[in-house]
Every structure is written in C-alpha cells, then in structure tokens.
Length: 156
Image (tube, rainbow, N blue to C red; front, side, top):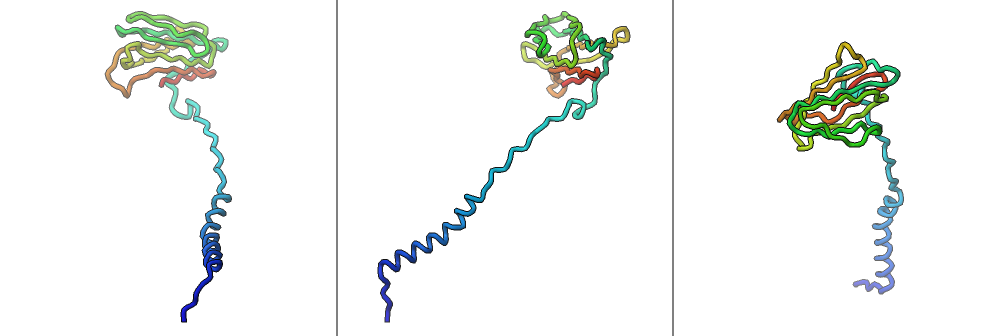
C-alpha cells in the first residue's frame, strides 16, 4: 500500500527542511564580527637602521651642504621649510640654520640614480656635506635625508 501525501504536507515538510538548512548560515552571518583594523605605527628611523652620522646641533639647528657632481639638475626640498628648488649640475649650495628635525628630499630631474656620500667636516660639527654623484646601481640610489633632534642622520 502506497501512502499518498497531501500537498500541504509536502509544502510544510519542504519549508521545514529549508529552514533547517538555512538556519546555520543565518547564525553565521549574524555572528560574524568585522575584525578591528590594527593600528600600524611605523618604526622610527633609529629602529630601522643605524645612523650614518651624528651631528651636534647648534641651538637646535643644523646645516646641509649639497654638492652636485653630476651633469644633471637635482630637485630638492626641505620638507615644511623650503619650496621645491633646483640645484644645477656641477654646483653646490649650503642650507643653514635648519631647525631639527629635518627632512630633506632630493632626486635627479632626469630620474637617474644618485650615489650620496656623506661627510661631517671637523670644522663644523653641526653640518653634513652630501656629495651627489651619478650611479647606475638602483640598490645604492638615495633620495631622502633625515636629521633627528638629537643630531642622528639617516639616509634613505
């Protein structure tokens, strides 16, 4: 003997099965909590690399001498202090009385790579001299100088 199911029984059985399948997904959807975005504090330059030099600031100020030994123009700026400036090929300039901390950016206008050779003259312990020469080595290319309030100098 075969049982004949009434349409209402089939409908309610199907509906019950649908709720049984969908209920766990609904709980997961409602239970999902958006993870909080972690706060990223980049390490200070002193935590990333050792300083290339240490200056002795004079009343909180330092000097930077840029000596462009390339044939190309170099664009530079003391962030928050000067506008964008150009240093012609084979010329030099001394930036004096820069209040620490100092951030100096520079690059060759023709987008060639720069080899930066720093030197702290014995006659001026609050000044750093940067000799800028051409290089073809991407790994040695530098475009930024940072001088911290304590006189530590970083080159990146």
